[in-house]
Image (cartoon, rainbow, N blue to C red):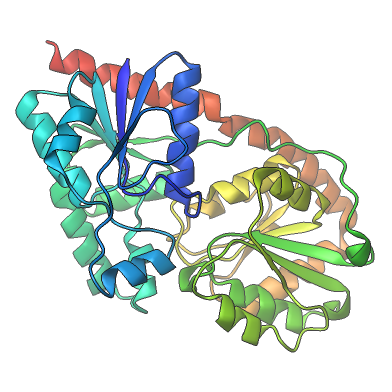
Length: 375
């Protein structure tokens, strides 16, 4: 098939949707498909159709700080990227996607959409993450776009349920974004300066809804505080706040943005993984971590799909509650045997989320919409 993927930002691996799109394009090509990328910028790919970025004052700076920018919608570029495609797949609902969808419908080109932009990720940036009014407004705005599709992909059952609750009309398919087989257990020695530390890791953008502050608060309260080293892998606008928040810890938090090879090592030499977000559509980083055998502690927030990965009650803590998180951290430090048993279970569980199989399921949706359009 000739498949066009439409996404605002493709040039930098600094947000989950872009990284998902990059992995998807790679596997689709490995499966023998011809893949085009339509985006604001597409550096580092084979067949690129670039429209440039919208750089409205304030809006551009705010979006950029969150690791995302919005693409322009240039019709001549849209036509070149879509003409002759067997299917066009949309990963976000913004202006480039809306204009491209209009063109595809006009030309009779089959389309599929994925719901990757959880409204709470946007409203949290505006300190409105817990506002039902604000979140429902965004769900209704996005609905106008997604209701134009017969089939919509969500990366988790939680997101599927949210779309159904908000009255989305399409047939909704819950399929994990999948993780690369690259993420697997391997023996890695801790760095010399961390050899005597109990390392707690979280991977994710530094932003309000990710709640890295809870990890810092929980470790401050832990009886093992002097022995614990927090590593926060990522980058984002909340870094300075987190630096200030963690200044009283015995062991300063390690902040870092890692290459895939470096991240694999960091995961494997860590002792425990925490995913503390208030809102999360899936959290591939958590799957990457437990695929390497790291036992996760996950927020039980109803807006966090990640909590579906809890294989034991001790892998969940009360959303937004640092005391609850502290109890779980101390529990696993004191119960190494149980943690080792769960580690083995998680390695096996991670095999269910292999990227190749997840992409094959998405291909079945592509074939379905193509066959429907050709009837």
